[in-house]
Image (cartoon, rainbow, N blue to C red; front, side, top):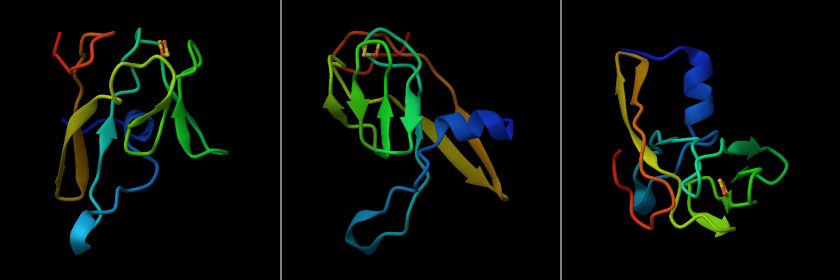
Length: 103
Ligand code: FES
């Protein structure tokens, strides 16, 4: 089921990730639940980074950890684009672990 526009905006990276090796850009959805302890990660337009206000983890546009105690990158979510609609499968993952494990 397609998500409301506001929900998609909070989950999608604001800039499409450029495909490597000449591949076209692709959509990427990241969970805004911080992989450290689950606070809500915000997008900071000034630095073009995702930042967690709780313990100052910071992530680049692909979700890679750049700073802070987060033990792994932001969790990617399954994305499907069909007939002009984007669907994102929201899922929760255990917090505080170095690997992405579904709850
Ligand atoms: S909950 Fe995000 S850095 Fe701790």
